[in-house]
Image (cartoon, rainbow, N blue to C red; front, top):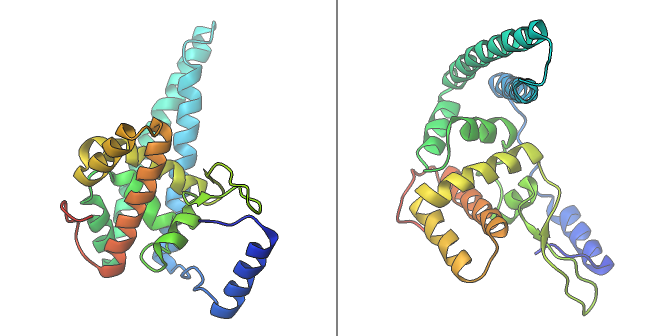
Amino acid sequence: MAKTDRLDAAVLAHYAQVFDPPSAPRPGDVEAKLARYASARDSFVAEKTRLRNQLGLNDDADLERMHRDILETIEAKLAELDRMIQSCIREKAELSQRYDQLRAVPGIGPVAAVSLLAFLPELGQVSRRAIAALVGVAPFARDSGMMRGQRRIAGGRAKVRRMLFMASLSAARHNPIIKTFYERLIKGGTGKKQAIIACSRKLLTILNAMVRDNREWQPMST
């Protein structure tokens, strides 16, 4: 649990200096290209969403037609970019193997797997607490002295966190481990959003362990 007092902050800073936790892996040429492609895809999707939300708002028929033409172009380019991303992944055996490993987990679709590969190179190389903090799904305490505040998530890599949240929505329905965990939280009185955040953290922990140990998805694992 992340600490908030000044003393705790000083202790954590000292720990970081003494033990020198591993830095993020330096991406190779293929990994760097994958990150560029994935970032471009995110931009295309955002523009597609923006334009789609404007459909039907134009009184001018010519402008409406232009919006639809641009949308069709973006959709075609997205399909092309998806092919480029898959080709990039298959350029390197390690990336290809890890992509297939992640895709085998119920709830992790193609976009989620690519995001993890492109934006979270530390996956499998750091502890579960460290990976949760990197993504921003670690519960940070709002404490001071003897006062204990509400736990919240903060910071981290927003792209990965958003993707993981959406993946967890699917996993809560289709992944037997996450589904059981989610239902137990809801039964215990946890709100739906907080339960999904907790599922995101658990799903990330599972993925981190799988990559670390180089093992395949096991539905009955805990």
